[in-house]
Image (cartoon, rainbow, N blue to C red):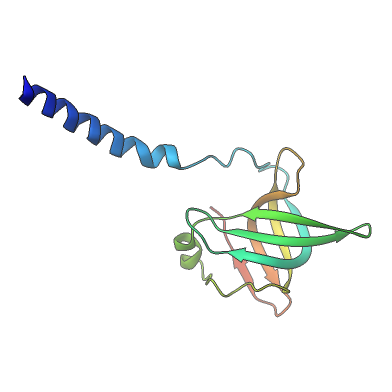
Length: 125
């Protein structure tokens, strides 16, 4: 009986290990992939974190400043596209192509980042 229990416990542990990575990853369905838009603003923060990177961009519009939270791929994926944790610094002026949030909130998924020095960084995940 104990042998049967150990086998069942091993199977459950293996199944749990296989399911965990899939459940940890979330969908990008919250972004409108048909509604690309450009933002012109200033980098507040660049978060080089797993599982996804984020750029906080302050955008001036109609005399108001709105902070946009822009999500991208993992540092590993971005590194393969020429990104480094140091490419964006607070105060950098950027133009960013994004898929906006479907909800209309100030956020989205970034696709391209253009800096004033002419450098362009891509992420098409």
